[in-house]
Amino acid sequence: AMVDKAGYKHFMAKEIAEQPTVITNALDAYLTESGIALPEPGLDFRTLDRMSLVACGTAYYACMTAKYWFESLARLPVDIDVASEFRYREPPIPDRTVALFVSQSGETADTLAALRFCKGKAASVAAVVNVTESSIARESDLVLPIHAGTEIGVASTKAFTCQLVVLLILALKAAQDRGHLSDADLAERLVALRALPGLMNHALATEEPASALSRKLSEARDVLFLGRGAMYPLALEGALKMKEISYIHAEAYASGELKHGPIALIDEHVPVIVMAPRDALFDKTVSNMHEVMARGGRILLVSDQRGVADAGDGVWESLVLPEVDPFLAPILYALPAQLLAYHTAVAKGTDVDQPRNLAKSVTVE
Ligand code: AGP
Image 1: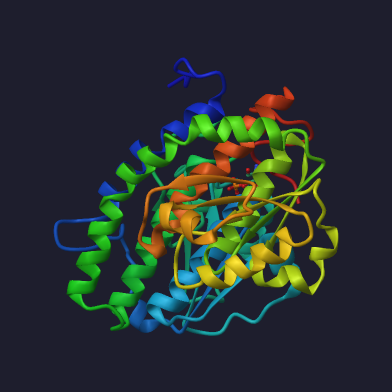
Image 2: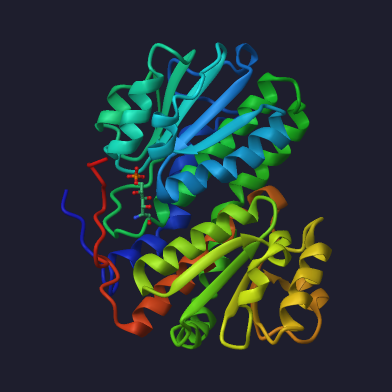
């Protein structure tokens, strides 16, 4: 069926707004009354020692986030690679490794080449895709659809959060199979997951302030994104989104890495967007923010009410999200990252849905 903008100015705006709905669809597809059900033939993590996650662009950042989940929740070692590097490095693929490829389109040439390299080597080849009739889906042993619906905007939004949800469910399944998650703990995490679409609606309600802040961001030449733990890949995704559609130079660093070099870039002209829920690592991030502020840097803090209060004075601007389970924060915080990039691009008057030099699906290596 033809997809239209449904009254939105751009497909990207529509796709950002659709996230509570499509996330609900993804949850419905994988969660049962009592637990998690994967499509056939499923995946038994008791027989696996290692995972290799491979993708490009935004899908790669979803893999990078998932590494934090698989390792901390399921104690399962995970390697992550961008597809264009993975294949030609000739990496060893030990037995009892599952190779998992993440792709919205399922047609990305680099990812497909990496998948073909793994066939016959990995114990199993699995794909997390949006387009289930795609080459990557067809050539995989196990297909895990993300249920995002057609994504038209070149800048991926709803596919990213749906990829994250499916990968998180997979990590919970791995934790359960490997004996690291009791039934009661799993049930608690699934309740939290079920509450995510409602929290996303609250996050979408920051659109007004996000758009006001974006008018200020649109004057910057460079923007830095910072995050710690599973928020670090999200910082990378925020920077990618900003680059793709606003053409502003944006980079991301792990908050703790700033002092090892990039802090030399900081002055009053560089907005620093810090994605930091009030979690166990928050105090460390606050001291990183003080290092930036001491050099005249302008901090835009994206956090919850407690985080904004604890960060104290000196923060340039803040955006307040609802409190969320730390393991769900990278999914929820994707929304303000998308909104900031979107409204910065709108303020700059770029072609948001069809940014220059980019294609929705990159079918050449
Ligand atoms: C995301 O905003 C990008 N346009 C791009 O990085 C994309 O995620 C990448 O090309 C991978 O595409 P795929 O998910 O269709 O494989």
